[in-house]
Image (cartoon, rainbow, N blue to C red; front, side):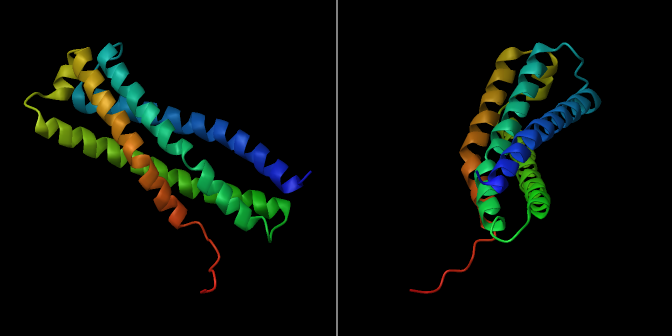
Length: 170
């Protein structure tokens, strides 16, 4: 048994649960705050709950993509570090990757919602405030679809900062 891989597995499971809960709860609180402050959306609005669910799902989809770049980083870090240093570097690298993915998700959500609202003749957030479930489903579907379409590009961006060793020219 490779102790470094076992430590990595435990760190990954524990960090996924704790960071996942933290990120999703933070996202929920921010979206609820924005809805109340800027759009005067009250609690118990089904349409807004659907939209919030789409945002949370989009964050989860994007954050789930950091596992492979993180494993690639671990394999490179694994060569030259003791277990404690390896764990610290893994957590620090994971935090950077999560920050990039989270920021990308927020930007994608804001840009897509803004552009869609400019392309249509209705005020989508006014309709969501009025509990128009149809509008909420459409905006939520667009948000999730754009997250799925951009996830690979964001993960490629994260892969670009993985410290791969230079290969000699052939």
